[in-house]
Image 1 (tube, rainbow, N blue to C red):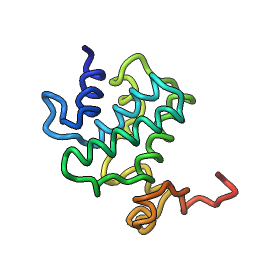
Image 2: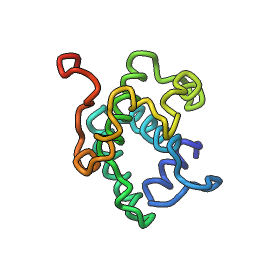
Image 3: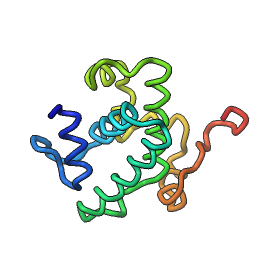
Length: 137
């Protein structure tokens, strides 16, 4: 099994993949990238969200799931795949898109205020960015 498949299988089983010391931001991005390589956007989003919620619950941290952050990243990853290419491997994609891997000072701060991201509303629901005029969306 490939490293991508191993990571996704562990994620879907609610456990940390062998050889990993946790499930970190780059792992979230990699799982989303993998789903987007297998599924159309909306199916990938549905699968990613369902499994991320299940993973968080299995880790005893269901409150960690954040709808806006999760879907905003998934949409950014999709945009990069469509506009710049998926890359032959995860390493290719990661090397071409290092800004997607930075955490906690993430790319989302270009689009979202910290106040919005910290809100219970954003945690429970996908919200549009508040730092970009709606006419630009």
